Length: 261
Image 1 (cartoon, rainbow, N blue to C red):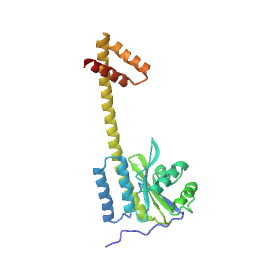
Image 2 (image 1 turned 135 degrees about the vertical axis):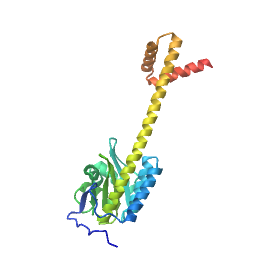
Image 3 (image 1 turned 180 degrees about the vertical axis):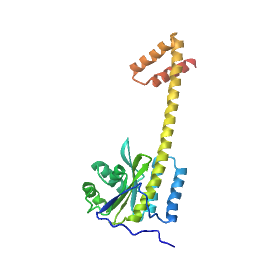
Image 4 (image 1 turned 90 degrees about the vertical axis):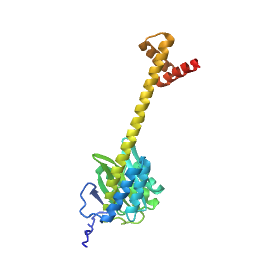
């Protein structure tokens, strides 16, 4: 059987940056790719929250990238920078230092939408402050692949190693595949969560509207005033009591219910 692997490309610098969207001519063996796809398919079908899903994504990264001793996901969006699904405290701290210092492979991978590999944190000079800060953690190598869904960069999936030179072209390809699958997972779960929150928000808005309408009816009946005046009285009470219109409406309705008892 023909060997589908090509010779590794030698790097002139301590690390390498590669386009995550670039076609990979030397794919892993079929069973390796099938295993990754099967894991992610199960996640897509079973997980309900972003946090749980990302924890399983990181577990998948540890299982599929030889040499990795820690994994995590950095989420970078309108809410800021944060980590999720980290395999251990060292990963959380290494990520936190990237956010604090505003430099590091995860941020670079997300911003550039390219896989970033650091072969030796002690000699790589691209993010010297971050490298120096994580040295006490015992981490010597890192690799980050961006999570890209459509035109949106969601963050990065990263792995860390305790030995320099732990990662190579083969592990780059594995992390690239894992990150592509993870991006689909994260995008789907986030969409589901956003839809759930929107649905709940709409339900709450409808409940508040109905509550205000009921309160207006109570005020109209109690004071013999038209609808617009009743609404004005509710708004005026809102200003006096410092609550929301829904709070005032609920108090009016509750008061009417107690009077009927």
